[in-house]
Amino acid sequence: MTSPAGAPVASAGAAIPSQIELERRLYRRARGRRSILISLGSSLVVIVIVWLGVVNTPGWAAVQESFFDPKVAGQYFPGILLGLWLNIRILFFAAIGVGVFATLLAVVRGLQSPVFFPLRILATGYTDLFRGLPLIIVLYLVGFGIPGLGITPRLPPEVWGTIAIILTYSAYVAEVLRAGMEAVHPSQRLAARSLGLSHVQTLRLVVLPQGLRKVTPALMNDFVSMQKDVGLVSILGAIDAVRQASIDVSEAANFTPYVVAGLLFVVISLPLIRVTDSLARRQQQREQIGGLV
Image (cartoon, rainbow, N blue to C red; front, top):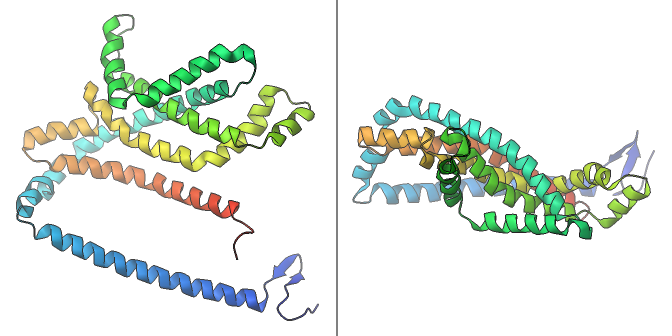
C-alpha cells in the first residue's frame, strides 16, 4: 500500500511515521543529547566551584575533622543503622494509619447531605487544627500528655510517636485526597448513579480511583516528608537513628554520627523521590498528550 509523500501509512494495525516525523524525532534526540551534555558540564563546573570555595575556607580543616571523620563514621555506623530500622517500622505503621484515617476524613468532608453537617464541621476543625500545629508540639502533647492522664497502659515512646505522626499527616493527606476527589468531573458521578450504583459504590469504584490517580505525585511528596519526620520521635526517647547518633556524638565528641544518620535518611528517601518525579512526569505527559508538537 502506497501513500503520498509525508503522509503516515497504516500497516498491520501500526502507523508508520512519515519522513517529516522521522526528521523531527532525530532533531529531538540530537537536542536531548546536547541538553544532557550541557547539563553535565554546567553541573561539573558548579560542583568544582563550590568544592574549591568550601575547602579553601579558614575553618574547613576543623569542620572536616568534626563532621566528616571516616574512622568515627565506620565505628558508629552499625548502631545508627540499627536505629534506622526503628524509623522504618514507624514509617510502615504510620503510612497505613495515615492512609486509612485520611481517607475517612476526606470522605466525611465530601458528604453533601445536611444530616452530615456536624461530621463535616468536626472533620474541618480537625484538619484546620492539625495543619496549624507543628509536628513537634503534637509529639510533646501526645507523647507526654496522654500517658500523663493515666488512662492507658504503659506504651513505648515509638508508639506515641507513631500516633502523633498519624494525627498530623492525616490532616494534610486528607486535604490532598479531597482535592483529588473534587477534581473528578461530576458527569462521572452522575453516570455511576444512573447505572444503579449507590453513593458508597460510586465513591469506592468511580470517584476514589480517579481522584487517587490525579493526586498520586502530591501524596508521594507527603510520604517523603513523613519519611524524614519520623526522626522526630527521638524527642520522646525512642532509640532511633537520630537518637542513636546523638548518643554517639556525646560519646565520641564528634558530629560525624549526625552526618551518617542524615545520609542514611537520604538513601532511603531517594528511591521514593525518583518514583515521585517519574509519576509527576508521566502525569504531565498524559495531560499534555495531543498538545505536543
